[in-house]
Image 1 (cartoon, rainbow, N blue to C red):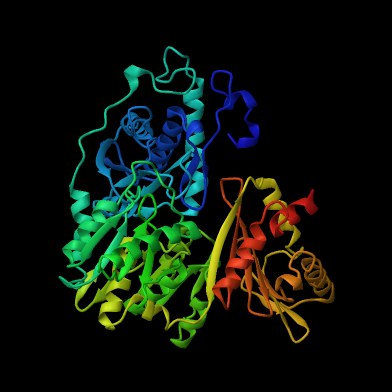
Image 2: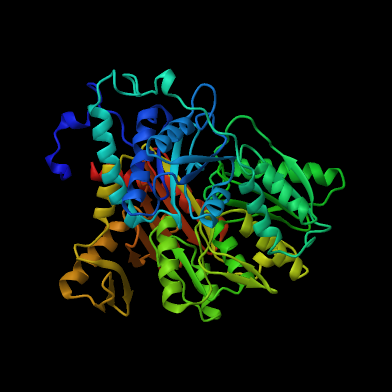
Length: 569
């Protein structure tokens, strides 16, 4: 039955319409208040039924489960995990509970055993939200899987919604009845050990001896594992900021307030005669790294994810690189010197992973990828000094942290020294809340010419060169040139010269809208996939300029994005 044939009542549960979870750039996310046991159950069961239909798992198989440290993930008051366990059981499968682990630790363990896995985490998003990440036995689900998964979820939803109250395991509000709530199995420690061994087998023993590293722990699920790993490799480790309250850390949008907090940690250690080499951390589910170098004057220098990934790719001598279209163009400039042209994708790890797979199948060479948040992905087996690292098709935080630390040791310098060897291009990102998704869609449409399949246009010597999703490249027709000229003229209403903006030279539509200005500034607008948010990325020749661009875009109530929204209204 196709969706258009469904009646409204088919989507009602005892007279009400629950809020459905939606896929974003990576996994399902939603407000905690909307993530009832029923909603979690139908999504988890639908995913598992999808895998069974594809014969990737069978009845009796184990499904690995882990989660972050949010109270809603698992606490006496609220447990999304228990609803997942019930879904696993009712699908004829067995839960292998791994305790609270980083997402990549869960995925690595499950992939090695060719098992499906489920991670309960909201990643970096605020406390009042949570999410679920699904992994096939091969790794993360891909964007091409989502439609079939949602169809399977719909089938489970119809069955559960149609049950009478006496037959259902859920009460009228969508919570598991007390007698239907399962216990979590005892946790299996093997995944913790396997994940750490992945790194201790690849990196030389004791390579961090003499290094002083501060770990900002906050509420990251991998906070203790990271300390354990660094110590096992010889580092002297200090910890700060441990929190029993969940702290949302978005490594793609680190605030000045957060950086000032980290700087205060450095200064306190300096006053006690301790000169730190680095300050590191991760986001909530420990798949996105936060790395800061410390210069000779004790000043903290944050390394954004694009540049961190570039340093790691250099260290690994990667032959092919895959990054989202939102990446800092320092990536392009630096790799061009090495004869490497990065493959560009839409934003989100599933897109990067899918492209890495295709590139590796086509070329058979070492391929890596990363995102602006620093999450690093290994798309092929890597070899370093005779030691091998297997592929891992999910974001990782520990691996890029260790790579950049080792690169600094290898070059007998600091992390800040490494950063100084990259092109002087600076990035900043931020987001604006309460930006309706329909407004976001209208905004993208406003800046997109009515030219079917267009990915990119660029002005060259008075003409516009067009690039299409089909691979075709050609010059614009007179009519198309008029449309592009109109866009450029209209853009000056928002990107004004007195705020430092110059003429637009190019626009890209791979994911959102990316504006290239002829003074080498770049601005990029992209809506959230599952929340009323709009993100703005900036790249410039100075950090202050990139920061200013983001501030101009996000300013309330009359910044660039709100002004565009008002004009649409």
